[in-house]
Image 1: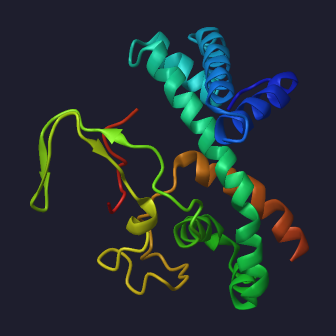
Image 2: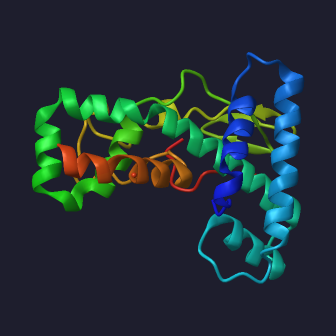
Length: 216
């Protein structure tokens, strides 16, 4: 994300407060406001940056006039929160590989499959038990005979999309083959999972209108 090491504990605390409902809505909203203000300052300072971290990439996009600072901050907050969700659930990936030794052995013998395996495990393992936040339709649209009007709330279930038999043959199976290339985890989810999983595993045993590529 490009957050300096000294600020990462505070960022983690904000993320946990936003995701948790145990402290009440007011605390969560306060944490979200503080995180947004932090990213606004960080991204604003990096408008001329050539760095490859998220804050620098967003800052340079703002500097080029491609997006507004408000849009950049919104993306940064979503990426930060989304990455935390996968970090908290990465243990399920290890559990799956530990209880399916044939999968673990294949990844040891074919390490080039690991990026593809991350996408497949993110598809197969549900990382939440609900559909999440609603999206608001910006214009009237019809999808498969269903009319969605501008202003309607729309819930997109990537859990259902990732088990869509029209997209994934035998969707309840884990398959690291090249055919399974369309999944619905976020970019931050893939990046976080790859960073979290593979180094240790290889030694001991990684506001838009739609999500491009999601079979929703």
